[in-house]
Length: 351
Image 1 (tube, rainbow, N blue to C red):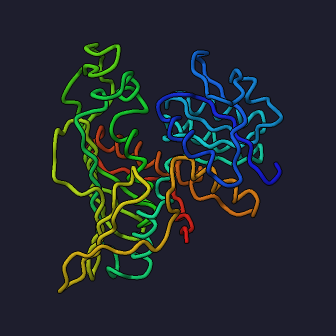
Image 2 (spheres, rainbow, N blue to C red; image 1 turned 180 degrees about the horizontal axis):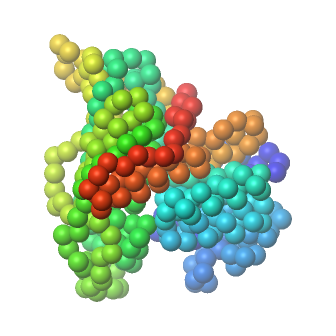
């Protein structure tokens, strides 16, 4: 690799549009090729190839894996076997078993694994982290994290994968919230919770297949409690079964105040601070990438390769988030607390 990380994109679906908007303006990154199993899907002004050809291409340094969740591990392993770095959409894999296989293969091949979400590199989560690190609310003792929606089938034209293994509110949206929580409070060591599937089927609400009914194979309402290694306790709710609510995205409560953190599915947003004797106030932006978009983590990985440092949206963090999610679902199924066997250091802050 030279000064520019040459990227080959695999999977030209809905999320690819956001990456394609961001990649051209990222320093040290160049999109050189793209591939999809559907030959009708193309990227304008980018060389199109079959996936196997892209993995083998000499001018591709990193494979950007934007396939559906059940293909994440297979695509990552194919790219790693060809000697490529990998950056995947979340989750890292469908299971911790698959995730360990990906990380082990990358370690043996001497290549890097990156994984979304990179939203935590924006000004929202990073400014909140700066407040915590500066002691603005004292010692963090608890947090809440809520993501509630009536379901993605209302707007997505092909939503079935959201309701199959690797989907559901926890595996689909949980990575945003859990990655933010680990960034803010550190890794998780124990979890417990409950989960349910109130509706056995869903109906597509938009697009050419509107009205099509399909089965639900995952838990669509998950409530959990997470104990972080620093002793803080987070209450978590992820649901595809709530029509409306007046809940915060993430709040952190400390011995000397409270912090309101913006939606971790976005890069920016207002951070608000409460201190005893004062009203809630908006905190000025003090850290994080401004005007960031999906793909910022790829640029962070490119910089880390040039400087021989650790990239922030890394495989260890993504695996710990995957382990936490899997452990929470196991706790719900077995009605007992589960120990999260992995850990991950908080990524270095974005100045």
